[in-house]
Amino acid sequence: MVSPLKWSLAFVLTGLLVFGSAASLVAQDRIESSVVGEVPTTGGARPGPFSKFPEPVSYRTGVLPTSIEIQAAAVNADIETIEIVDGVMQDPSGPWVVSWYQESAQLGEIGNVLMAGHLDFWDVGPAVLYNVGNLVTGDLISITGSDGEVYTYEVMWNENYDVANAPIQDIVGPTDNESLTLITCGGPFDYQTGEYLQRTVVRAERVEI
Image (cartoon, rainbow, N blue to C red; front, side):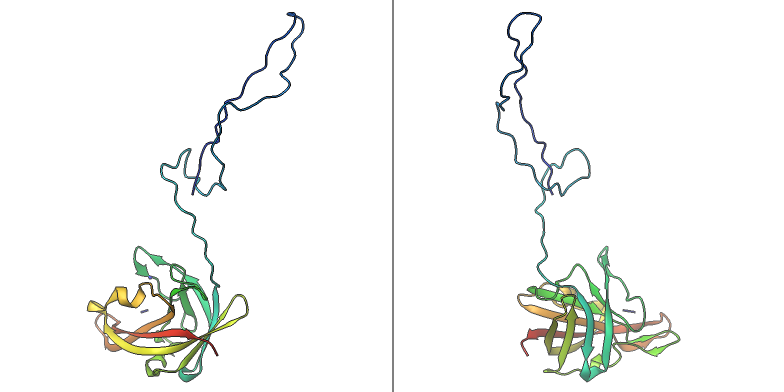
């Protein structure tokens, strides 16, 4: 179930000047640049000798999530970090872990913190997010960050979407507030393909407790 900058610092330096007889060479007292060079950067790009168009460096201001607790859904689990590869959200690694997608917002950042977990699992049965379909508006979700702080989110809505025509951008796209989106499988199970035909999506927003 359930996806810099590199500039060459160029200085033109004056050379040694020759004074006196052929037997004595005296170095110029001070070497000065005749051209003001480019200001060096921290060197974010190192793909080759040149970077044609410098890319802005992106600095993250949030906190990495480490664990999740949802009392109303009997969830108490560790959070792993995974990727979205070629536009595809990779599956969580096991039945009892929730995955955070590193391309999404971090805790404390404005944006959509995107997470997923299994509904059930082969040869295991019900998995970590088995009960999230029962969450209702007002239920609380607690995420502990790597800074030790607990970030609390309140459920805004809980919907099932057909995989074939789900509004992907509305689900996983950025938001203008501190949001959390939980995704798991839902709806009918197709025994021919071995897949659920829907996804359960829970959207929550951060609140101060």
